Each structure stands twice: as structure tokens, then as C-alpha cells.
Image 1 (cartoon, rainbow, N blue to C red):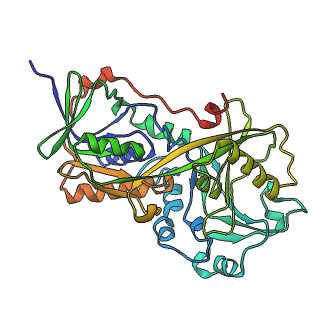
Image 2: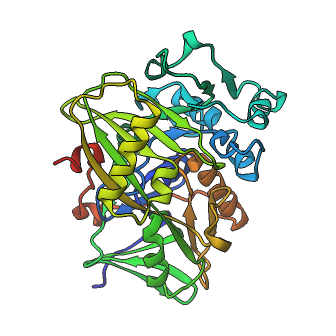
Image 3: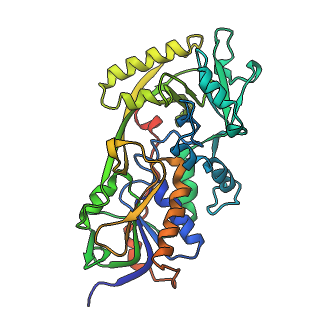
Length: 398
């Protein structure tokens, strides 16, 4: 007697924000969709995110509205709708760390950027603040720069993962690739387990940097992937006020991006990105920490942080290959070379997860994939369920 064959509309591999959001949106549309994750949900790129849901203003620091800014500009509104339970995915219960995100310059912005921020094009997206409205870390007589409030927000990513996972827990499975494999029969991809086979109408790869190995496991080389590395810095300290902000520098990207978190003991941790993390991607960790210490001391010299501990975190952002390793402008969904029922998807950034799920919808419509009948998933129950990834503000200080 052969292994049971399970037929589903959709099988998703990868339990980060891309896979979980796509699973939720497809199941809300009636698709019989399942998701497989080999580690904890939200591992690596998702839990390593700073949680910013931004509309692209941080890419406009040169004083121009770029293509990437256009692609992402609607995202804060889309996320806010979902957080209110009114979007394609229900995010009610997700913790919002901050309804506001700030942009500041310790020396003042160039006249070009100041004029651009004041333009009608950015009305409602950027507000110049009076000193009385500055966030607490900038309320010092020593601060002589400018500060703006952006139409962005910051989410607690572990709670985001938890909310999405809880909604469809019964169709999320842990997969052990030493006991299972990706296979293809002609132009059709499927998953073979130890004592079952799952044949999806469409297989969707949403494993971030892990997509590269999955594509190769299917015997394909395209679409090709690039890795854009970064090395974030984590600063555990004793300063009570949270801070969610970009500090401008000499480039079109932020010199320093700060988000605030608390570890499981309630201790504050600032998570530092921006140019610090991208330019220091391959730096010696001790040297990067020394640079971060100089940056914080130069930019916020009036703050007493008390006792501090410093760590770095290296992450690879998996993305579709671009010329000169440029940052992709939008989410990517495309076919796996040589297969009729396999798609690969990269959101390219947390904010674009809704955009990615919409691109999946378009791809399924083009392939005439519609919701089918429910199927018996009993054969998968022995796989078990993946947990939620531990935060880096806990794990790196352990």
C-alpha cells in the first residue's frame, strides 16, 4: 500500500512574515492552503526586523521621491487598516510599539531636503515639529537640529508573528528536511514526506534567504537570489525613554536608525541600523560596536544611558538578484524555472508584506488557480507545530 497522497490548493514553505501573511490572505479567500517551516516561525530576517512599517520617506533624504518611495508609500495605511481588523488580513491583537516615527538631523537639513519635506507632495506624510513636540530623547536645550514626525508606525514583530500564526495554527507544520524532500515530476513540484506526499496546485517559496536552496532543490537556477548583508548593533542600557527614529546623514539613506525594545526582563534595548548596519555589514564586531558608541555619543551626548552592554547581529536579506546589488523597489513574485506550479516570493522588506500577498493573488489569477474543496490533512499531524522565534534582544545577551 503506497503512501497517502494529499492534494491542496497551496503549499507555502517558509514561516516568516511573508509566508504567514500570504497564508492568512489566501485562506481568508477560501483557498485550502498549508504552510511548512523547519525552524521557529519568524526566524532570522523577520524577527531581526526593527518592526518599522514605513512609507518610503527614509529613501527620500536626497530630496527626491524615488521609485522605491512610490512603491511603498501606501503601506502604512494598508497596515493600519489590517490592525483595525478592516483589511485583507486581521492583525487585531498585534502590539504597536509606537504610532509615530521620527526623523531628525543634529545639524539641520539641507535647504533642498527641507523644501522637499514641506512640499504639497508630502503633506500628511511628514510634519515638521515645534520643540515642544519633540520626542523625549530630543527635548534637550543642547539639541539644535530639526525634527519631523513621519506617517509611519512600529510593531512588535514577535506579537505580529504570534497573531498571524494563531489564526491558522491547524495548517502550519514543522518540516524536517532530513525526513522530507522537494521533488518534481516533469513540470510539477511536490513535497515528499517519510510516509506521505503532498501535491499542491501551487507551491510558494517564502523562505527569505532560504529560497536559494529550495530553488536548487527543485532542480532550478532561476530566479536568482542576491544577499544584502547587514550587521545591526544592539545596545542594552538603563535609559527609560523609547526612541523610534532616523537620523539623517550625508547619504540618501539614514545615518542611524533607532528602534526601542524590551527584553523578557523588561530591560530597554536600542536596536541600531541605517548606514551603520549596511556600511558595517562585514566589519569586525568590536570595531562596529566602537563606531556605534561614537555615533550615539556624538548624536545624543546629553543622554545618560547608565550601564550599557553592546552586541552585534549579522543578517542576510534574501532578495531577487538586481544589477549592482541595488535594493529592489517592491515585493517580488515569480515562477520557478521549468515548473508550472511553483512560485518564489521575496517581500524585500517588512512593510511590503501586503504588497507581496497581492502579487501572489495576481499570479494565481493568471494561472487560473481557484479555491478547491477541503482535504484531509491527518497524515501531516505527526509533523508537529513550530514555535515562535526568540527575540534577538533576549538571545544575543544570554
